[in-house]
Image (cartoon, rainbow, N blue to C red):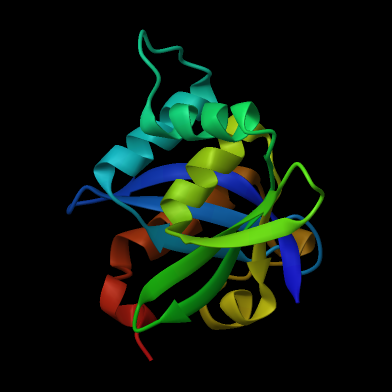
Length: 165
């Protein structure tokens, strides 16, 4: 079963400068899933989040345009699996005839497309159970700055190897 996620943003893990994509459950336990991504993908997501227009279409913009021109729509993206420290995702496309097609994608590319097309981002519950970081109840968090600082501390200490089974 997949649950809806929200894109918290892209952060940089210091001191390695490794970009991390942060997705959080929109309801329920509100767990956050950190996913290491590449620099170009982080830049592409940041461009889309900030609404920055480029003089020429970026790859993800091109992909969304091609889908539109073909009469297909991106229904949703789903983070589906975590194997040996690597996250996997799928694009769920609706074809002009109404049928759907699922295509494998990297989570970073899937999220970059979702941001551009305003498409829901989902994650399988097993991902949240394995890699989700749970927020404390509201009465335990004095303010949002404290929560952000705790997440920042976790991101500074976590290594990609920590997600390996």
